[in-house]
Length: 114
Length: 113
Image 1 (cartoon, each protein chain N blue to C red):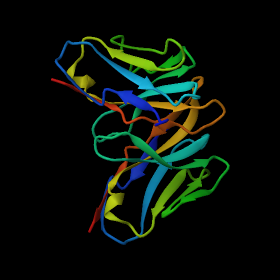
Image 2 (image 1 turned 45 degrees about the vertical axis):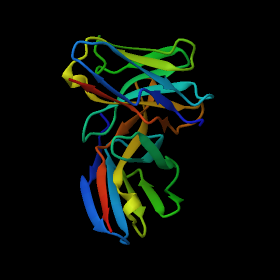
Image 3 (image 1 turned 45 degrees about the horizontal axis):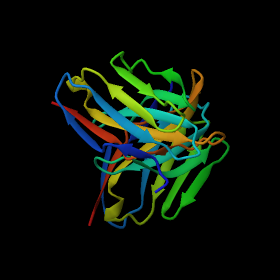
């Protein structure tokens, strides 16, 4: 059974710091890995998608890496801002019982302090 | 707006009542998913449609839950005889055939009192 773990569960840092969020998964047979942002009481906004054949993706101040062999991904946020405060979820796409599905971690709740 | 749309955004219901949620996927996406997210947890898979065919249901989906996608476009998720444990965020996602990227709606937050 695929399990996805995110560490830390919560993180609070001062504005301007660079930070790293971690995601680990137990089964390397994945199609891709997606990082999502979720604001309180809202849905999921896709931030970055890394295909299984790729090593990293970048969008603005965000950089995500993928190491399938070790079952790890990191989301790097540069020069953090208070507007980055949200819960960040990683999810791996796997083919399970005839359907491609996303398996999510529990998320990292990020607070950026002004 | 051409994103995934979910209605209603919020629903408060009394225990034992039936509720129905709607999801309108991105127009060219033939894959549609329902997920459930409880407080402090990541979303969990409930069910999956390819066009109008419901191809899989999670064991999380008890017989009080039913989902349809009658014309392969919008989908509905109905919960009968709601229980307090059904309180959660219900998320819909869609995906285009040939793509591995899923797009999510804003969710429907259900509170059973």
